[in-house]
Image (cartoon, rainbow, N blue to C red; front, side, top):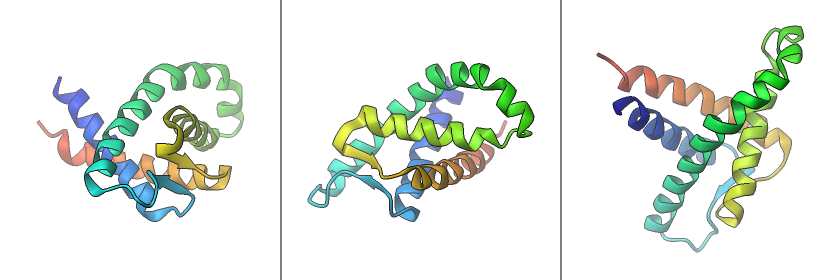
Length: 123
């Protein structure tokens, strides 16, 4: 149970850093309060976690030949697509504008969530 909570917190923090660093990724509109943005961040992290749990393994299996040929670099494209899918599901509350922003955001989310999981998931 702790592992799920740690991964959820890591996803939320990673999404927050991506929203902060990448200008093409927005959370809520400009008039949303801080509490509203926090609630939106929690909901988007939940959606992102579910997308990564359900859709990402299927896409990785289907893209296995491309992953082998590109020595795993196609994972960046898969991460970008998962971020764009999250933005599509979340609607206006979370927007990813363009594939370049999605690739950069996916890279940032991967690095930050790895680092947060490394810090939080200590036995």
